[in-house]
Length: 619
Image (cartoon, rainbow, N blue to C red; front, top):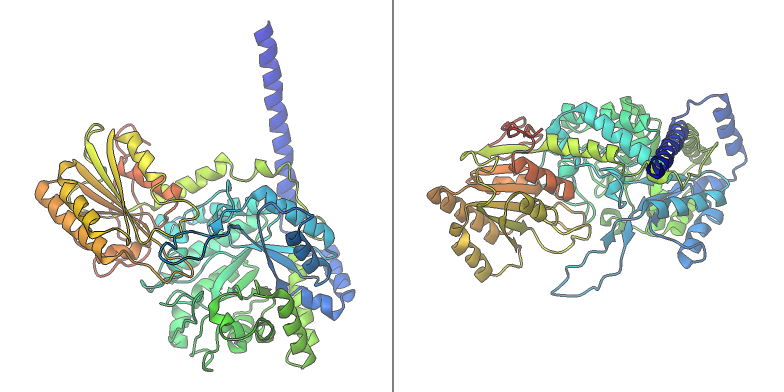
């Protein structure tokens, strides 16, 4: 009888939880619906504009940033944020993850400043700032791979190029929808995604796997699906980096890239995905800090300050009437060119509506005011930009409700259902480009020995998780005798020689090659000593009839340096999910069916990929 009573209580608890969850979901989805601009919404926009003095209008054009970490209301950090709302009357905030102090030292500069933020901390500070603002704040974020791109515990999808390898628009739509639901639960309204740049330059150090691929049509299809998914979840999409950042060899975080293609080439390659994203309903476009002489011949004139590109091409020719954002104004492509005040004034003068992440937000506001006072920007142009921003806020329903429910947030962020979508995309993207010895799935027994080589571009900067942190334990679950070795540009010749001399004693070799394309690094290769080692291991494996599989995490173009490898698997990412999925593919637990979204040298064209079925007994 006692057991039965406990069971009844437990059952009632579950029922109550499900009812609360269903109610919260209904509430969130209702809150997330993108509003049609009905008469009430239009009246709110008009009445709000009428009550705004010029200084308050200018405030709407500047978007400072904040960190999604715990922030006390009684702190210097919060006082600064509150001042931007109450005194400067900014239009919103851009949300980053966290950051920690690291020593600026020589020789052992391996520490990373970046850490993931916290969803509840972000929602808490955003709620407090919303309560202080007369006009609802517009909150943006770079959630390119989902909220988990910036915040711990949230859903983190594979990089965009993995979607290109999976080739399924339905998955892109679902990723957008999930990202929107999690974002709105936290209080974030605008995603600076999708990246619609066409990555047709293998040496691109800043876009690379952030792009869906090199085919403009496919990029446009996936981008449009992602835009529709974001909208279905109640979030505004932003296509970037206009008019196309895919064919550069320079990181705009470091210096100004120049794209010298003709207008006809831009019409065929770079612009079509933007047209598709805009047609799908993208409410925002972000420009890139890139110079295009064919569109604006003035020397050293990036899109950021170019009226012919922003106003003439984007506004007038493409007919885009949504919000135009600058890229981060803290990137060196613009900071080394002019002051924050001049940069903000020139960006608005060129036709942008919002100046993002200025090195000094107060100076940015002053720069815009000065440009208006000097007649370089008209008040009518300011009013048009503010109307676009208020329209975006009205479409999001922020004039009705701008805060979020902290208690219901955990019901929507990082759920098993959302993680399942990310896992499905990761599985579909695994691309086997070569397997001359039929080594995938790995043809060794559970009790045979396996050497795993974790080969890094460089050991610094892995603040969001060390490479192979998931790979090694997943291998050890499936094979009893795994020896793991890490090598990088810091490995000595003697260490590399030791690996070379001992590989023959193992029944199989697996190498995980981690090559990033990270902002501000300017690096995207494996060092020559490790390339040589892999070439030598390929020769030894062939002589010894020893399976050798090399898995590339991150930059897929790195595989072109090693055409002799017998078996090559691409993941397009270097985070935990990619590592787990790669091991499952290696073990034959999932089918392999990804197709190359980019060309790899002269060996492998777009669309290439070998197919493998899952082993009997696996899904």
